[in-house]
Image (cartoon, rainbow, N blue to C red; front, top):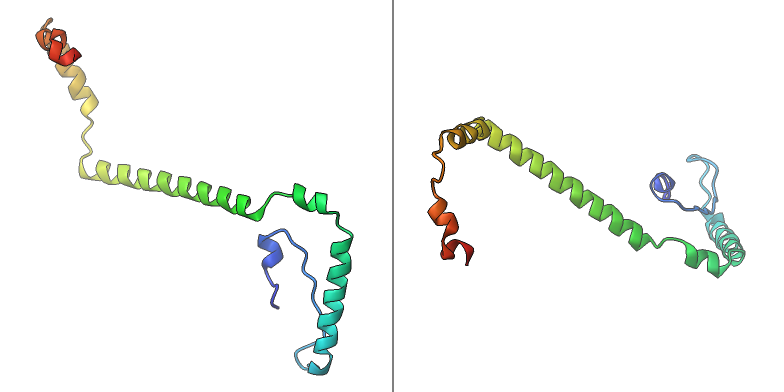
Length: 122
């Protein structure tokens, strides 16, 4: 059961040496032979795969890096949404309508001296 679940999460081939056929029929005497047979089969299988095909595969570190970046982006989005929900819970006031009301009541030319000053443009 050492490889249980691995194939569901990671694309791979699991080669196992089997020396018993149930929990009630354990046979440790054949364990070494089973391990050697699995190793020999794995070695023969790897010999049949050309090195160029292996080099063409996407590296696991690249896949894991992409997954980590995606997880970080999801975490940032979730924290941003949580932060926004907390702010809305603390102050549900919508300030855009108030700001528009102040802009509409503003006298023409108010604050224009500041916008025209050298300090503002400097």
